[in-house]
Length: 434
View 1: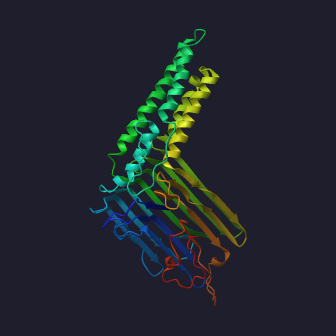
View 2 (view 1 turned 60 degrees about the vertical axis):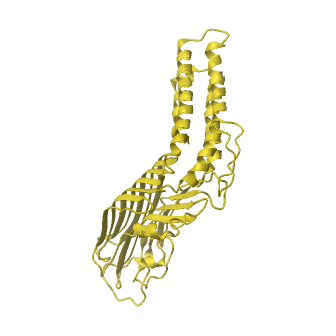
View 3 (view 1 turned 60 degrees about the horizontal axis):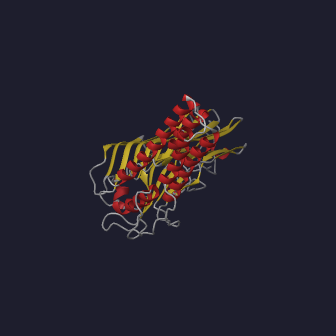
C-alpha cells in the first residue's frame, strides 16, 4: 500500500545503492467454496525491497491457510541498524475460516505505529542541492553551481521575496498613498494581510534553514492495511482498506497528513455490488509551498478581511500567493502525475472495485527518468467471481474453480506466489484481487 522509490545522486558505498525501492504494508486473501474449499491469507510488513538490509528489517509477515492455524507477527521496535531505520508496534495478523460456512473466511491486517528512515548523515548529498535551489528561489543566495554528482538546479529569475514585496507595496499604497482616507476596516484588513505576507517570508526562510539539520528520509506516523472475505448465505463480499497518517518526506519537506482508500465487492444470491473510495485528508509540501499555506492566506483574503480590501489589491495579493506556490513547485520539480482514481463494475458474473495508487514525484535535479523521490500511495482492489461461489452443501466437482481474492493493488505486490500451496488456482495476477 506504500511504495517508496529513491534515486540518490550517487550510491553510498557499503550502505545504499543509487536506486532504492521498498514496498510497505501489504495484505492479500483468497477463498473458494464448494467440494474443494480453499482459503488463505497473507500480511506483510515489507516486501520486494531491493536493499537487502532494509528488506530484512521489514521482513515480518503472517501467512495462513485452511491447514495452518491463525498466524501473527509482532515487534515492539526495530533493532538499531546502520540505515537508521526506526519503527514501533509492527504487527501482522492472518486468519481464515471454513469457506462453506457463513462468517469471515479470510481476514488479514498489517499495521505500523511509527516508521522512520534516517540517512545517518548520507542525506547531505541529497538535501544540499534541494536546499540551494530553495534558497535561490527565496532570493537568499545565487547558488547556481551544479552539485557534485547531480544536474544543475533550475535558474530562478524571479524570487519569492520579489513577489511578496510587490504585494506588500500594493498594500502599502492602499493606506499611505491613497488619494482619499480609507476606513478603519480597510486599515485593519491591510495590517492583517501585511502580517501574513511578512510571516510567509519568515516561515519559508526558517524552513530552508531547517533542511540542513534534518537526517530524515521518510517518517510515517501510522500505516494500516486490512483485507477480508466474508460469506453470508450464497453472497460473498471482498473488502480491502488502507490508511496512512502523518507522512513526512525529506525532513518534512513534503508531508501528507492522511490518505485513505477502500474497495468493496459483493456477489451472489441476487446481489451484485461494488464500491471504491479514495480520500486525501490533507496534504502539503512543507510550509514552503502547500495547499495548507495557500488555503491559510486565501481564507484570510477570501473572508471578511478580503472583502474589505479593494478588488485590485485583493487580486494582486492572491496572485502573489499563487506565484509563490508555482515558483517553489517548479524549483522542487514537484509533480502529482497520478491521482487516486477509483473504478467499479458489477455484473452477474463478477463484481470488482479498484483504487489506483496516487503518485507524488520530487525532481529538483531535473532527472525525469529517475527523479529523486517517487512515492505511490494506498491502492486497493477487491473482486468476487461467480465461479468462486458454490452451494453451501458440498457436492462432487471434477474441476476446481478460482479463488475470490482481495488486497492492495500495488503492481509489484502479491504476485502469483501469494497463493502459496494452493496451486490449483486458475489464474495468478500481480494485483491482489477478489
